[in-house]
Length: 173
Ligand SMILES: [Ca+2]
Ligand SMILES: [Ca+2]
Figure 1 (cartoon, rainbow, N blue to C red):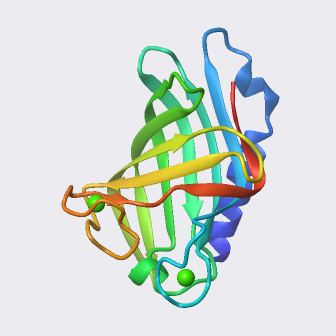
Figure 2: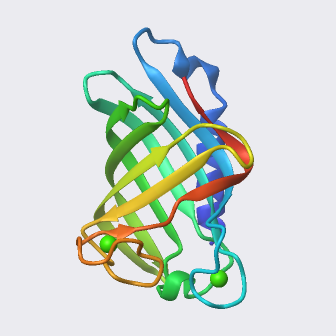
C-alpha cells in the first residue's frame, strides 16, 4: 500500500509538469484526486470511491502516451474483489465531441495481498472538471466480468460505474 501511495504521488507530480503540454497538436489529459461512485457498491454501508492520477498525451492520430493509476485505498474486498489498484501505460486515446477524452492501454491490476496481475487492458473516459463536475469511468478489459460493481455483465469486461470527482480535478486541453 505504501508503495502504491508513492506511485500515486509520482503520477500527480507528473501531472503538474507544464512542459508536457508544450508540443503542438497534442492534447493533454491531466488529473489527480479522489472520486466517488456515489453508491455503496459492495454493500458494506460505505459509499465507495477511488483515488486517481493520470497524465496522458493524446496525439490526434489515435495514439497516446502516458500513465494512469486508480487506487482503491484502505478498503479490503472492494467490490467483492481484493481489487486495490489499476496502474498502466496509455497507448491509445481520442478526444470526444463532448470535450471528454477516452484513452486505453495495458497495465497491472493489484488485487492486494501481493497478487499483481500484469498485462491487463484498461479503458478510461474522462469528462473534465473539478469536484462535482469532472467524471471518470474505468473499464478493466477482459477480466472480472460480473463481479459486484460491474455495470454491464456478460461482456467480458469489468465495467466500473461512473465516478464523480470529489477532490482534485481532471483537465483536458
Ligand atoms: Ca461500500
Ligand atoms: Ca462487464
